[in-house]
Each structure stands twice: as structure tokens, then as C-alpha cells.
Image (cartoon, rainbow, N blue to C red; front, side, top):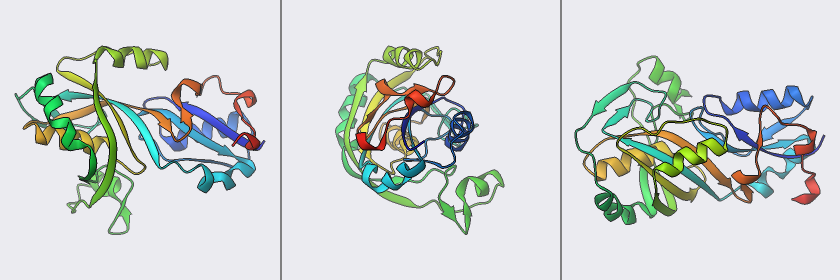
Length: 236
């Protein structure tokens, strides 16, 4: 029962919940993962089982790749599809305007930490304070973005279909692929890009397509996961 599972976490499920389901289904005693994925996001969630949990440092990925669909003109309190709308704008940027700004999104940049995140503020998780209506100052962090490119928006529908996630493409949406260092908040990048374009946006879809050497094309679905998906430690 020692090895690594490259799991595809579905949308609407926490990483802890996904881990618990696999742990119970496969009767595993010890399971960890390489980096939390937001409940609203889907894609690569690498599970380390048994003695493979000792490989955390060895497999720790310095880079991750995401695809995200931004809906222009609305912003939610969570910056993703799970939140309540808190801001709107009539400004819908053109593809030309977006592509002109994207180079400024590459390199070392400062981003704000989302209000609904797991960072500790005043001894509590930020999302706990946010849900209680507590006012607090959000920290900022420097992250490195290796690549920020624009894709055809219709590709999002095909990507989600490949992951078993049906989706109808909304109006005023743009699709992006981002390669970044670990610890980057895609929701915050969405907010920053929108600000630089003079509008607001919500990250309606977030797909993690790669964590280090683990790619989304080799993931297993949570409703079909089996011990055959447990790759031996020696492979890593």
C-alpha cells in the first residue's frame, strides 16, 4: 500500500474530502498530498500513500500549470464561482487589449492573498474570519509566473469534458494557461489581470493540469480509482 496516485479532483470537492474518499475506498492507512487544490478547482491532486509520504520533499514541485476561465464584468467575494457577487463593471476587454497586458503578468509579481484562503490571520484561517464578517488586512506575496498565455475560450469546454465535467461556456469569458511557482493563487492573478485592464473578473473555472512531473492526462477519476492506480515508490 505504498505509492503515488495521480488523482483528478472533481469540482466542488475539497482536497481533504477527495483524499478521505480514496483512503476509505482503497483501505489505506496513511495518505498525504502535494498541494491543496481549491474546492471550486479541479485537476491534478497527487496523493502519497503509506511510506511514499516520505517522498514529499523529493516530489515537491517548484512549478505548476493551470488553465483558468475568467468571466469579465463580475467579481465575487471568493474570486471564484462559489462566492457572492461584490462588484460589477461594464468594461469587457478585447482580445487585443488582454494580449497587450499579458507580458506584464510574467516574472516576479506581487499578488494579494484571497480573503477566502487557508492562510492564518490573527491565529485563525482567513476564510473563517471572512465567513464571520471580520474585517482584516490581507497579506501580499511575491510569486514567479513563468508563462501566462491566452487560449481559445471554447477549449475550456473540451478540457472539462475530458475530465468528466460538463460545462456551458458563458458570455464575456477568456481562457488562459498559466505556469507558475508553487504557492500562487490563480484567483488573485485573475483579480490582478482584471485590475490592469480596468475591469473586474471571476475565475469561473480553474484546472490544475500539471504538478511537477505529474500531468492531467495521466490522472485517475475519483469514482473509478483502484489499487491499479497506485504507482510504486520506485518509479519516483
